[in-house]
Image (cartoon, rainbow, N blue to C red; front, side, top):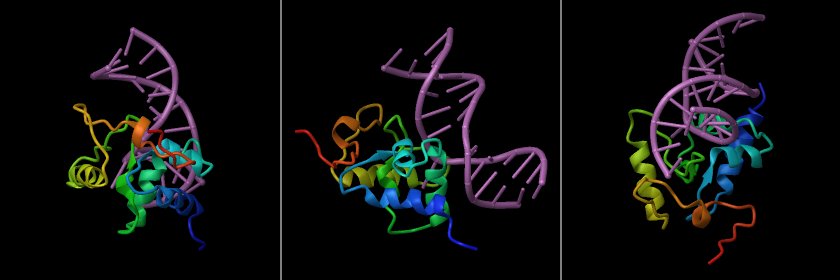
Length: 109
DNA sequence: TTGTTGACGCCCG
DNA sequence: CCGGGCGCCAACA
């Protein structure tokens, strides 16, 4: 049974996200060539169980942490992002205009 | 093989 | 601007 290209490809994009940058599930799925697989990005990470995978740099389209219910991962993710210099507003949202990952990985100052 | 699930995204009010 | 609802599609049991 060959590897799962779907998960493998999605995870590959997540690994492409540079330090101090964040990307939405939809953006990652699209970058992987799977525009309708936004949900599978999170699923892929969950199944991957890769500790070196920068899953914390992945947020939903609203620029917020995806509430998965229990587990303290959502709080951990926020702390990790703040540790990388990513700031949150009062709504707990990230400014994609400043921290949103781009193919150019370029940030306009 | 069929049905249900899910780290989401977009549309509408 | 915010909340609620519908749609997509592979992975899993």
